[in-house]
Amino acid sequence: MTSRSTELFAHAQKRIPGGVNSPVRAFRNVGGEAFFVARGEGARIWDVDENEYIDYVGSWGPAILGHAPEVVVDAVRDAATRGLSFGIPNPLEVEMAELICNWMPSIEKVRMVNSGTEATMSCIRLARAFTGRDKILKFDGCYHGHADTLLVKAGSGALTHGRPSSAGVPSAFADLTISLPFNNAELLRRAFQENKNEIAAVIVEPIPANAGLYFPRENFLSILREECTGNNALLIFDEVITGFRVARGGAQEVYRVKPDLTSLGKIIGGGLPVGAFGGRAEIMDQLSPDGPVYQAGTLSGNPIAMAAGLAQLRELERIDGWKLLDKSGAQLEALARDAIKNANIDITFHRLGSMFCLFFAAAPIVDLASAQRSDLKMFASFFHVCLKRGVYFAPSQFETGFISAAHTAGDIEQTGAIVREALAKL
Ligand code: KE4
Image (cartoon, rainbow, N blue to C red; front, top):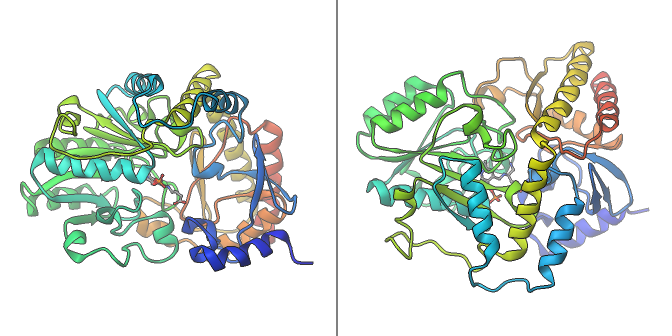
């Protein structure tokens, strides 16, 4: 009997490219067919054939409280009764701006947008205008959304589908983007010397999470800061994933490095389409209508999305979510490491707070090249065995797993047992 997911996927492929509205959902890295989700509640999701999964994708980061958290649903329902969108300033935008600036002191002014891509794209335009320079420096495997300038050696879906530098991006654009191996301070210094006074900004995921999850060497981010300052280039932290996840003040609080601009997304929308970018007032004031840099959006600061994001962020603070998430992360790590010890396979487990990744490769994994040593076939088998047993991990080796505040110790215990079983079967 054909499953409902299979029927839907067949129909979707007739009307939607690849049958999906975002490539990573297509299971191409792991094979098989994407399932269609019917609903989610807390740490669990159900597909249209009523199969139940413990969810470690969490909408790729936004569902930090789990699915359909009561506080967020109530806030959305309440705001919706007063109208869905106006294109007129509303009080919730000011509350959101105030919260972001208080939680991330490097942000003196912030503007709301509708996706992480819009946030990073706007940071790049702003940096180019503020410095009067054109070149941008990024790192191989880091993914900053799908703006032309940033689809050069990009991570996430671009990497998963083997096209880190996308077709359709004019070489004139791509030539303005320098991409280096992450964690290589020597090459960074050399790039600044070879492109004297030409680099407008360095954009970085302070904790790269789009080629699997790995970490900056102890002083790499401070070297980035020093090199940018010394060369009058701006430092942009892309905290679309890490913002308000790894700490209340994001990765910049964890590593105590102050960027000039920060891009945000995912969690701040509570599941609705929201991005934001902000930083030093003297830079942000270059934006229209005060300054010469144009940037706009019909739905930016939309009251429903603001209500959802504010409810999620305030709840996260109320329950001290970061402590709770780290405790759950530590429990999963202990179980995973135990399972790995029992399986005689090269696996490197990385975790920070509620973000984690199992690389099917030996350590050390410090950049894209080392992440690409992973055995993708083995990852795919692991993914499908876990899926069959009711655990949904990201359908790509080049993504990161997310634990939510809704995952109970029981859920994680169950997950640990399934991981152990899956590794033993490889
Ligand atoms: P969006 O445009 O997808 O909202 O955000 C782009 C983006 C920017 N910066 C970072 C660090 C990101 O991780 C992302 C988007 N993340 C991917 C998953 N790793 C989104 C999933 C998808 O593309 O469907």
